[in-house]
Length: 357
Image 1 (cartoon, rainbow, N blue to C red):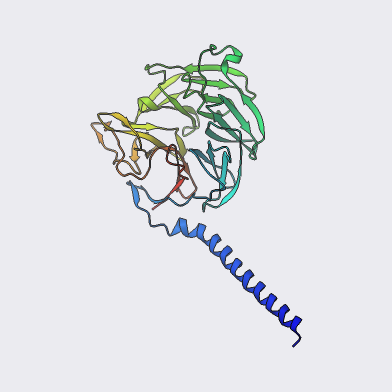
Image 2 (spheres, one colour):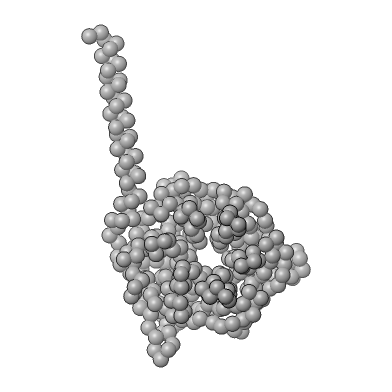
């Protein structure tokens, strides 16, 4: 056989082996995303009907897609899980439910903290708070900024020395935008969908109508005839309920748990506990867990925390029971009731998955 034919056949054989190896590698990589969700052997945590197997590897990506603090997560209509981090190489990271990276964008939010998704006439938009820049942004799903809400001093609602460090937003039934100034002057500020100021309420005080860290604000539509605002008062370890007009209604005490924003799924309220009080009711670092409340606003499970116990109708203080988490900052719930947990100040840790068992 001529030499050139031998060389051609040899080259074809090598290319076939190379393609087969690449195909096997691609198959293995594609399969890995499924394996790491379904065959995870992490510990089981939680209580009652809300128990979960921990998967620490679910959200792990390579060095090309880093995170700093994983602040908040939402799920869009396509069932994609969207993470906000304050890492400017990629403020937004988009996963599928298996933990596979789908997309990333964003380089302008050094204090990216709050992430809300809202459907407006069939089209979804994101609302991002940046407490370092002191601004709130409405964006398209691919990051184009449509609206910016700046410091309230520019419209005469704050004094020149008043801090504005927004941490969260929610959108009312009529499109009004509610902003929690959680690291600033402790007000909830209400704007129209176009960004026109309506009112503010709360403020920095220990009074029942005021806040000592209004870290989150969420629309609670569990009673469709009376939607309300569920506001986080983290330092006072409680959620506070306000009407859409800013009228105080009541408080839900969660002693020992320095909670993040409320996340609703069906009748249940989920929240990341960023800190808990382990000794002498003092806030303790690296002591977070997740807390879950039922439709009557009673705690029913604390994955990573102590079992909720009521005595004579009063909830006893809750603390971290297992060192699964450091600082739980947000929870996302999927259609199968699995949870995805974002953590702050946790050593650049990617989100964990808690698989319902």
